[in-house]
Image (cartoon, rainbow, N blue to C red):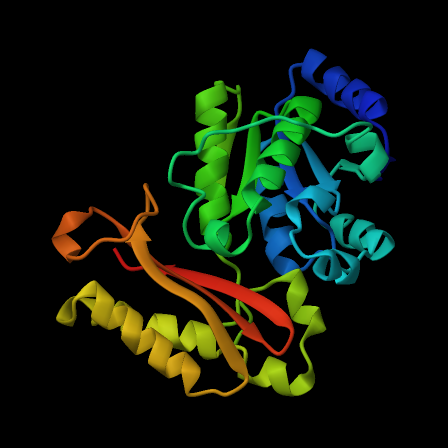
Length: 281
């Protein structure tokens, strides 16, 4: 039986009891509208911890588009039913007023990590992400917290924050979960029309198509190849295609300049914004 809490005080009380009994705490922060990708994170947390907490909170301060916030699906009842199959023990589903009784003015310095890709097109987004993740980690006090690699830049920023603040939690990256046709699972996929859903896997095909042969080209050539393949489909409008160092998230000119590289893409199909990535090496 899953326990449901809505306040910080009752959530802390439940978790502190588990900690006092010597149990390890696994934590998966989400914004709800759960899909199999989320559930895979929870299942991994269940395997590795004694007691697993999932938060469901649509965080208003990480949206720089009010319309996007309004349209974000909220499906708490069905989310809890899905979590019932995973072994999750506690769902924390606070209100915005509970999380932000007054404006949170916390400031972070992520260097250049939040200045590129998502940060360039979504000003203020990562500040909102960092604030809410910091608050949630302080409330839940987990041993390990699990994040999907689809949000590659977000994961890098959260690891940076945890390291700088010396928070006592291990951040566990989890592989992207995909549909059979390659589309990265996302709560936003539910907003795709039938025609858009049929074309959405173009992003993954463009990325995976260059993984084996990327070294034949310079990085900028790969960027252009991926752009060209996506733009052949008139439903798509590209925001960015970037090839960056997996640690610094900065672009580079030659493959020998970095130890590990990742290609990150963001594009609109209709009114739905999709992101995806693939690590090249």
